[in-house]
Image (cartoon, rainbow, N blue to C red; front, side, top):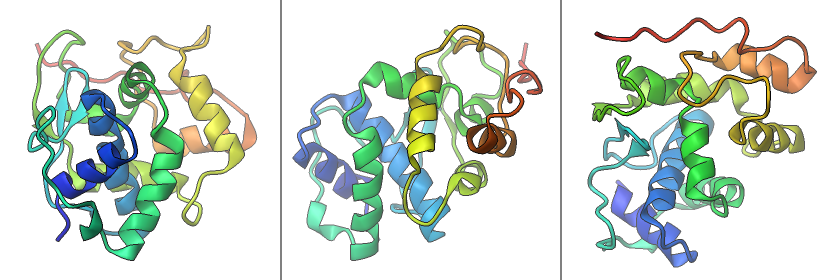
Length: 192
């Protein structure tokens, strides 16, 4: 099976040098592979760290994988994911992951400043992203709304808010522009 090192090497071969961006694009490759292809892109686990999802097997500049190890379907998934997330800043990517349920749940209610390393289960990624899957691609509306969401427009909860948005209500908001998934969102539970 393809490893996270192989995918990280491919990300780096596309000109990405920032480790946080590599980590977030790696996460989205795994998440969308689960949603679109029904299987993980790689077997390495992903953890919910304070600054978002991280694959601990990928260390700073030591990426020794083989980009050509990806199967054609995996490479297709990678290209679609990279076209959306690959040019984003690390702040944009961190902000976005901090609003999504898989990372929030895996942190087990930890406060924003607390360190955690709980695994983000593949099942959680698939359950969250599958409602957004429309073939293998993103609609223009989806891209626009992600940009809108990631920059914390006025009126939305801040990144360290307790609001958790469910995939279905967020999708309804994206498609129809009706209701606010944040107003109906239950607060995340915090462990004291």
